[in-house]
Length: 294
Image (cartoon, rainbow, N blue to C red; front, side):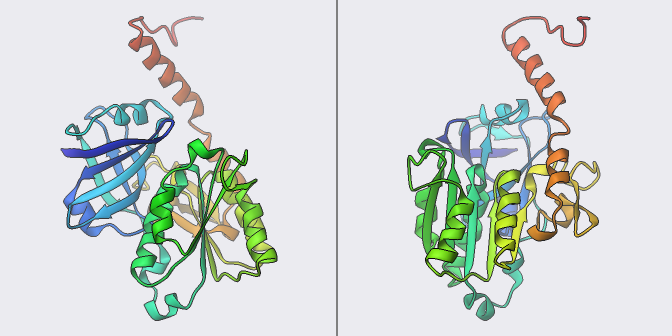
């Protein structure tokens, strides 16, 4: 059992949890993920590591309550335990194994959208600890949906915020900020890393392609069982079929078939909506009739 040490709401329906998992904390690297189950009957939920502290033995995850299983996890309070917390899984970010002297000579830009800010943070933090200050763009619908900006500001070289409604920072899309930095401010970058909604990553990739800027994206949102056995996370990268959970979750953005990935992302929408309806019926004390009515 894995005790929840801390829990707090970052934004509406977005929760941060710090979990006591010493073995995972001692081995975790930026870019990796864990598999979480609320209880013995719970669904396996892959979640990217948002932070880790080997000395404390803790791993931080950020969860958006979308379906039945994520709501069940977020209903737990500090002092309660998760049934499973397996990891770290997946391949670490590419730069972790790069020569530090070479890495320190690079200019890196991170683009985070919504909950994608959480997995971007440990990457930017790791780079800062190794002498690399990366620039970061964080995008959200509005000010209230921004998360972890203060933590990011402490480790980033420059932090740029973009909101759809202009309630904080630049009014507009993260892709517009990328173009502004490169065309108006004359910034040069050797690498861009984008993590966020699939549609955002697609358009970041299209934007950076115009500048010949190497771009990495994380396809963690495609994963289901996290072991490569279910096949739900397979996607085409460079014309080849790969599995996000074992071959990734990070890939060359300019080789990813985003249209296929987005179709695959919506495969289980009907089943999830059905599960939510059943849960709502049970919570209301009604006998569920889904599948019984003609």
